[in-house]
Length: 244
Image (cartoon, rainbow, N blue to C red):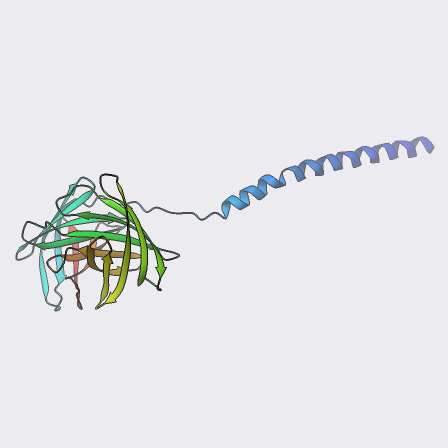
């Protein structure tokens, strides 16, 4: 009886030590798990891909007064940007800048859109705008980030920093004011424009009254579904472009 009792005590001691060692090892793994959980709380930025939209399209749309129109659109890849050329009763020409699943276009009548520019922003949380921009006749685009310093929603004052197509940097103050069916944009570096907000996408045409704008959503099937208007428009038209 004594020998069996001693043996039982020894076995119990061995099991106790094994348990302590096992628990200690398990505890050592906790910081790794905690670290992984902390890493998982970091904000995840999803960058949407942009589809190549070059090609020939058939278009149908409505004018600002509601009357219908139809015609043809040719979208031509030009370096970082796209040239848009419409034949819809008369010729129009413009520059398109993509950003995610959207493309913004600034255009004018005729074949010379010199002086017309466009900016397309994604409106992010915290009053931040992340955008791409370009001008007609230039095959490169610049970038711009703007942080709101006052105001609410899209309207307000912003501090903007950006890069020109040649890689040089710039800074500017930006004021966004509601106007008609959209917003007036004024930069402190002597630029101004008019644009609209659709969801989280902000499309701005630059260049004064002769330069109109189009804001397209690139649908999964490749259709360009757009809203367009003139500088300071109080009415807008629509356009749907289907690739031939």
